[in-house]
Length: 217
Image (tube, rainbow, N blue to C red; front, side, top):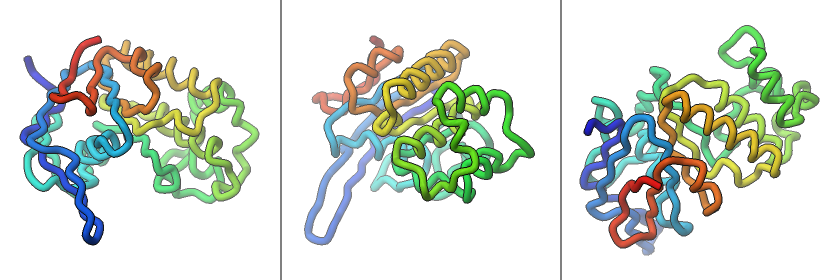
């Protein structure tokens, strides 16, 4: 079988002064194209780290990650630059560049699309367009980041605990959009702390298990 994402012999440690934590030791996994993989595990198990490794945002101690036919290079974020990867980070403030919501949503395009307006309406956030980003609540920021993310047409979607700040209505919009994207053949890797969200997808990767591997639901 051909795989879209291959993780080979991955080692990752974190150091804070005298403290040391091992996240991955000789870790391997494979994600087939078109899969919807939910990554689960306790806090500190490596859910966010694995997404950042796939993105090239952090560097492993050793090992390799291959996306498509290209090995991920630390610091280059090649997949995002060439439109192959869309990433919804947990730290929302890292995502914004505009001063207002309208400026942010129209960043790199001439005007908001009908899909943008539809998503804003579904999330009950169209009234936020003139607001400054720095005046939004955590849930409002997550909703705006979600609109940006879902309007992206990249074939590989990476999400880092996206529903943490969303209310029930917004979480349902997210679920329906991800299910639709999966039905369209896009590959989704979704880190979540909520067990109920595992059922959204087709596969699960439980980082708390003795031998973590991608398993079909």
